[in-house]
Length: 192
Image (cartoon, rainbow, N blue to C red; front, top):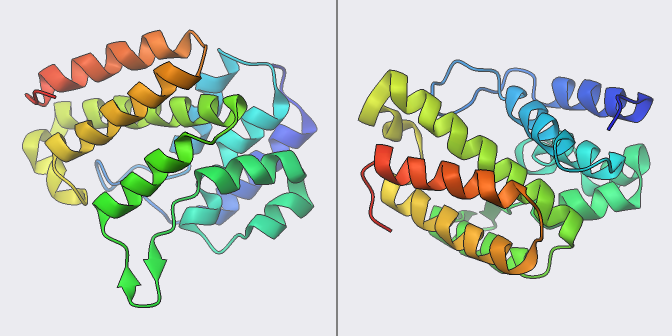
């Protein structure tokens, strides 16, 4: 995929929306590095501009005040549908939704995602796992204090997501995701 005006728009939008947010793993890295890395990963596996734009914007509705209607207005219905189908609902009237419930809902959503959206989800999972491995090399077990769930629970989620992806997605990204997952199990000393 070649760089485009629309990709530049998405980069600028994500940069502004995620301004001041930090990644959990080290608490220092700007959050926006994540959607940019997801887009870079996607560029190895697809030439579809909407998928790459959705990769850049995939956390904007979940993590900022940007709405699905605004995504559609700015980037079209296809990108909106992809972003919306990947967005975890974190709150309800009575308060925050527990981590496990959110992840179970996401896994359920994965069973209905389009193949394009599943590819974005796979790139997201690949970068998140890779980032956790990178941060673990620096911070060790101390890193887990920044997350809402310990290593075994997080790897349970990734295993479930990987099983759905293997069933529903035909892409070479799964080879890299599997390799990274197996490495994470060893490094984090988790049997799943």
